[in-house]
Image (tube, rainbow, N blue to C red; front, side, top):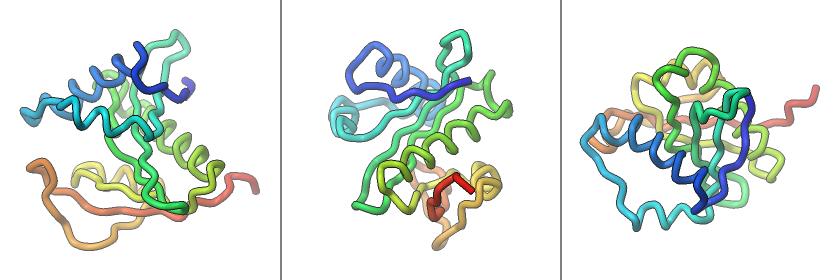
Length: 148
């Protein structure tokens, strides 16, 4: 398993959009709008791939300030869930964000994903809220060097 940045507006990006659509949007009856995708041109897109090159999952990192970055649109193929793909992706995202100078990762976790993020040491901040018709929690984590 390995992680790569996915360049915007490439065939790999189209594959990533298709996975996001299948895992995150279709189950909610949502569709992508070109305007929303175009706004991601300056975000960081990470993909997690099998050793054979199959896209297993991905996420988007959106800088909010010089020190804070938001993890969003985390999607893992159903047949790759509960096999370490999400953990691999999150850790790769944290490492990259830290290397780029960010010191805090924030995210909006679907309620059912909160235990996953807690295992990765994210803390809940604030009260539950509804986003895209689903209950979410704001979470954050202070980023530190992975070197001991």
